[in-house]
Image (cartoon, rainbow, N blue to C red; front, side, top):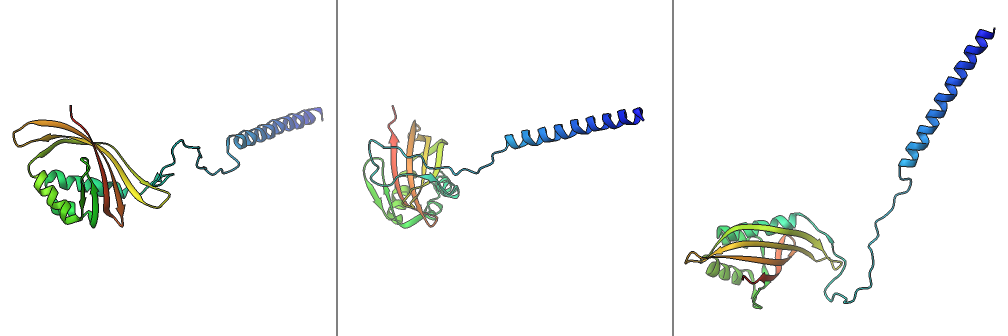
Length: 182
């Protein structure tokens, strides 16, 4: 009888250890899980200068970046018909020199007159970001650079920072900025 009690006691101790380890495992796994979903809230900051156009941008549609990249491919290839397929008829381009080009036809005329005289080499994009403002306007911000080869064979490195506004998959505006070459 003592042997049976010892075996029973041993089995009970083993079962207690297994139960204790199981409970301990449950507590550890519960402690490692987040029990409450939290929403990411937009941080508010009292800015020194209130934006006059819009504020609180969020990441936009990445397909808009492809539209801008394809437009650039058309410019590099001097395929102005392809460029025109990405531009709205009433687009306005605010150029680096302060001038404004209004309308797709005027833009394509400008490109044909100016881009046929040069060749863009070593084109690269440093940053391209698609954003949407709290006003619903969609933009692609692009920082890019290239070596411009002039008709006499000289190369000049140029850096741009352009902001393209899109609507219904077409470019409706561009604000262009250029870093002056040294």
